[in-house]
Image 1 (cartoon, one colour):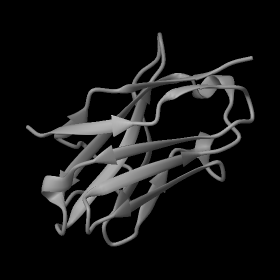
Image 2: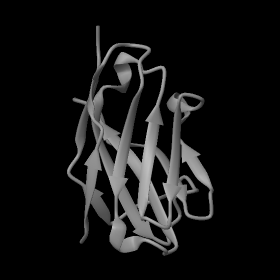
Image 3: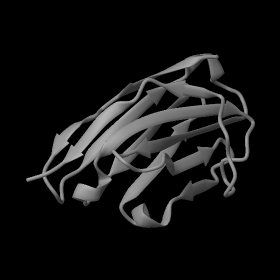
Image 4: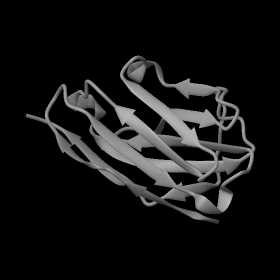
Length: 123
């Protein structure tokens, strides 16, 4: 397994923005899926957004229009831009990756994960 390196977590007020970054440089220049999952206390882990190196994206409905994911395949990096943040977005966010992959569909099970970074949205 490859551990991904995450950055960008923190605390923000409702309506604010954060950007999460993920590095998987050993996968640069490969056919690659990258994405973010999150888990809040008492809730199941859910996929937030994912992007294939062909440009296809997937978003969970609750973040549509607020979160935006992109991948720089030449570097093996991805970022998640989170805007108009709400308290219900509070969770630990985990980066995930898979060479190849079906992250543009409703079924994706990546093998590579980051350690997680806390995002807290509160007044």
